[in-house]
Length: 629
Image (cartoon, rainbow, N blue to C red):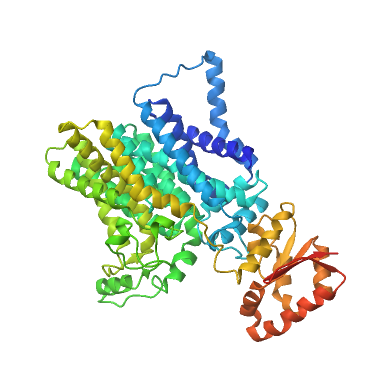
């Protein structure tokens, strides 16, 4: 654990959030004001880091510290000159809700970190790829990748890896950095969601109920390490900023920056966010019978400023990967039909897209999926739960039945939440309903959880009021509903997030991953070269400069180099260990051909084993580790 990195994380976030909201009207509540400064700062950090790189400012934690502390230090100096007085902190009755939110936060953080550290490797394949680009940013202090080495930076928006790279600069262990801060960011999102829901619904109890439901439903984020963990949290923070525009139009500025920050953090979700923001704008404009220009400016201004990244990477990330959709001209006279025909071809599916049924939503066991035992998707678990689903239906019915008598503020949030619910529900079921356009349908689940929680909270409050009218104490109803939601949703969420997840499909055997785990006996950042790839070495806290020209040049004809040539090169660049593994047959086979690889790689292994320049220090059925003499 790196205490200094945790302290710096909150310093970066709070310092930037304070700087951006210092001149605005903030919440009068001490806890909301300061906790949301952490949120605003965290949400805008990715955009700040991308801008720093754009301006050729090194992504160094010391430079970032100086930037985020300028205004807080200036403010502190002015306060000191005026005569500093210790503020009197008064606890209000409404602050009790925040206490319960903090309990939810700590339970969530416990669940996610327990699951993340339940095994000594990264789950699945994505985190290993993220690890390499995070190490690159931490070491080189930049995002630009001239050799096109990494999957998740350039043209992929680099906000997540840039943030993790900064945090890794002050934390020795890359694996700990990624696992802990990924879990922390998701859990902090629940605190930010409470303050958003409280402002949005104009209700402390509604905000708390919505936060509890969001924390319990399995479909809202697992501890899987990917950029979605950060971008969904940014969405929640941006929605809070949008709501705060009602109190001060200056909140348009952080709203815009947050929209831009989301756009440079994850590509496909940013497209969905656009619809979510537009629905917010449309409902506001229609109900108020006037153009809600502040949210309009925040939306389009946010996507415009994201061009600091996308102006140079849009073509590569979207156009070429869209099968020529944007590049091929549409015939004259068929513009409309041609466009929609082309649009219908953009059925971008995810690795887990499928048809969903009622059992998926209710979290009922299906063949091959025992949900109470943690058998669910790991990157984006599916399902809501019986009680949460029932509360959703009650909430929808309550809104419809009382809509005419609602005051305008409640009408606003209810219609916005319902529009989000319909949009995300259709997104999940784009394959179920055979819709012409779909965009990673299974990733809509995490978005669906947000309006679901808001509307289910309305159902929660409706039942409390209903039972109180028939003489049942409010606390009794709350306890029953909380236990029922935990039993039908929270248990499954805890189970899937604390289950043993596999290390990914790239490994050729269990013996291979077990052999790699031996590297944990070595000091962090020991230089290790693997015949297969550097991702696994870097992910396990070792080091190899996969992006360096000399490494890429050496790998270009690695299979044809004898043991002596390999040894000389490794000694020249101060490597201490060499790995020959099962993955090398697959990875080198793609480059040199399977036949040649199957013939030459065993010869190289025998040469290395027989050479006095290499000492075999560890071996399993899937790999061997040699110390370089």
